[in-house]
Length: 215
Image (cartoon, rainbow, N blue to C red; front, side, top):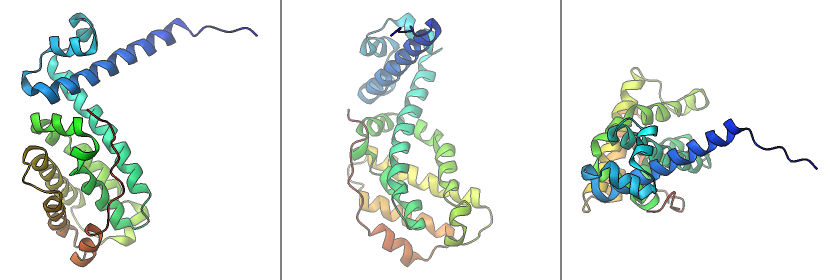
């Protein structure tokens, strides 16, 4: 049997992708540890690469850190969507990802520690999170929720509330998961969903909180 070698371009692309991922991982660890004081040199050392290699992939530290946050969020989001897809109740499919988000310290502690250092970047992720939430009000669930005007604004407001609750949990050890759930419940009043239905979902046991990615 003849073995055909992978094209040079294919090997190079895979090599570049591996290096980029390694730098994102290194940036996540450095930000979690050093916050705003994390340097390109520390990130390069963490990734076992030269500083010049870092700049081949990212123009500056700010861009690298922003991409590191987005990578961590996407990692968590993929896991949370998978958890919600197991639910048969449309309302629980809506609420569960928000409940999981405020518990990110237990499921993605690295992202939680990064967020405690850079809460402003978490707020920058709100438009993406809002789009995901807005999708849960699509055609498959139209009959499950009241028809409302200004749905994008309402979704944005609720997403903001969930993000603030998440940041509080990441930065304030006295703010509990139960308080975060109540924050979500109050915010959902903007959707005119009967409060007793929201409360019933918030009282349901959560699925096992597996670790998306450890420190």
